[in-house]
Length: 503
Ligand code: BG6
Image (cartoon, rainbow, N blue to C red; front, side):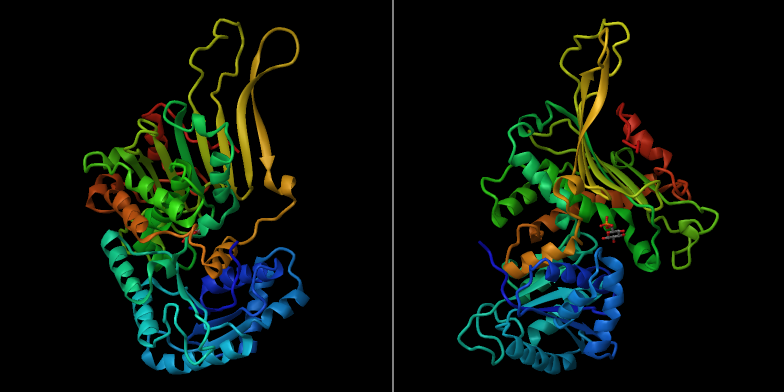
């Protein structure tokens, strides 16, 4: 059984949006859930000058806004874990006083020199900060750290947020930079989608039951849809987003994690090594489209003006004529035995009709239709399993039943399991359980170096010059509040299929 060890969680980029909106609220939830060691503290590092108390007050507003059931008394307890250090983490002069502060906290709280760094900064700062951490001698890998507790071995780990590179080459370069300072066992490449309850539940559904896995293959599954539709726009992040686009922002990262859990082979045992090895294998078996295939394997779009906000390509901060996609749908095939001929369609976009993150597993029709000559039988939609990840957490299994009464008529019905009803729980912020896993040294739900580079290789044709044809006519090619460009419907229609858009 893994236990949470005391540590200092050092958040670089403590004044940023991610830290305020997600990380600290997630840590509050973990504190309330009793998941943090009593001695664990959080040290926020950022350039802005402020005191511990000022940071605590600032965060109170964020936490109360972000979490359900905020409790001021519990926050006051939690706030005792929060400390702030003003400094520019890319500069070497930041480190002697930072090390001093870490040593003081470690001695005072008894955190044994265990440090968990979280890079919550712009991507271009990852490598310089890792270099500085290393140069400052903060990473000692199992040996004593500073002058604290010379007899106790400590650990230093690092959590790296996405984007993890822009392509395979830059991801490899970042991996090398991290690898110079940390062992692979100490590097936690985080993807908050793996912290989502229903994403984790996928492996339990598949591998802790006997009824799903026998049919979880090309023989029984017609196709799979993975959707992450958002109603929001790109917010204040236009400059970042314009360099990134939906494929990098969502598909290569989050949705490939979901894809891996839906498609991977069963590991022999649920251990970090085994799960990560299977994820590497499945991502590696994605069939990368040729230059000729790219345009017919994807649909890209940009939202039009909604009358209030400008169209994406006219937003301030977006490069003139930008062809960055705010919507992307891609078709993925695997070169492996299990999924031969079964396509996986993945789509995501901003300013769409609904906030909806889900996996649709569409089964093939029964081998023979015994009711084909029954007049007015109806029904006949094939079985379908919908795993709703957000905003609701639900499983829906559709199957055919007889309509009660005289005569023989079929109807499609849904059997539903709603997590909130069943378990009487509210979803927690996905970062929380993942950060706690990192505190425990459990890498199961973090990405391996090889997997990240493999995921980049698989999406590159959709991003580089091979995608030019798919980007022609991208400007304002879908209406706000719609389900995306017409080309996305055509992508499936060409294969005789349709997206699940019904509520
Ligand atoms: C982030 C992306 O990683 O995930 C955002 O950068 C996106 O653009 C967000 O909105 C979606 O996360 P969630 O948990 O709301 O589905």
